[in-house]
Amino acid sequence: MSVSTLDLRPDSHGGFPALLRQWRQKRRLSQLDLALASDVSQRHVSFLESGRANPSRSMILQLSETLDVPLRERNAWLTAAGFAPLFQIRPLDDPQMGQVMSAVRMMLAAHEPFPAIALDRAWNVLMSNGPFDLLGTMLGEDLWARIGGGQRNLMRLFFHPQGIRPLVTNWATVGPLIWRRACKEAETLGGAEMKAVLAELAPYQDADVLWSAVDTTLNPVMAFQMMVQGQAISMFAIIATLGTAQDVTADELRIETLYPADPVTEALFRNAAAASG
Image (cartoon, rainbow, N blue to C red; front, top):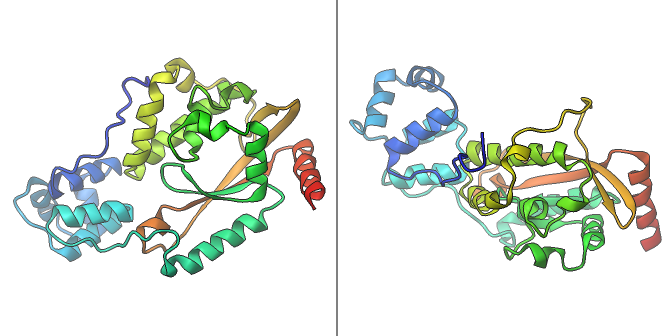
């Protein structure tokens, strides 16, 4: 598979029948599979996909729940079928998001002295803790301005020509893994924003590198390794999501915590925290 043949187009919004069929195929389910899982007749699923039957609001919610459709896309289903969207999209500073954002801030602060960030589904950095900001400073004061886009975006950080690829010493191993993870998320989450970022960055990439990772010793996790200002840094990430989100913004939040993969990296961040008081 090559970068040029990867389908980076946003999901089609050609009416409810097309959306239902598209998401069923994403989940690799037959009409019978979906019918059995959602307690609906196969005949009715077929009629919905062909447009011979119109869905009720409850049927849309029932099928989208079975297919684990993200909340933003469930709104698109409802709109396509002529219903009002159900799930709100609140800004991060909305008062009703207060407790959620308080929890996110606590998670980021509790992870110090190691880096942690909150991301949206396009991997834009929404919030960060001090160690992550320190790491960004080590990578260059003008780093985020160099890679453009108007936001701190992790995909641009890794894959933009002015990003950190030259500093990543095991790029041939981790580069393909990061790219494929982003592609998988864009596909399974219906991420039009991530697809746009991937389409922007794809012309800069070497397809042979992105789709054929270098063989390496299998470890419990794959750390990314960098050489920054003469200092070797090795880290791996753990990602957390909100399990009961009923708001689009909350549903799309990702908390990414970075952990040291060796004692040298652990000492680096602990010493930096001690030096800063």
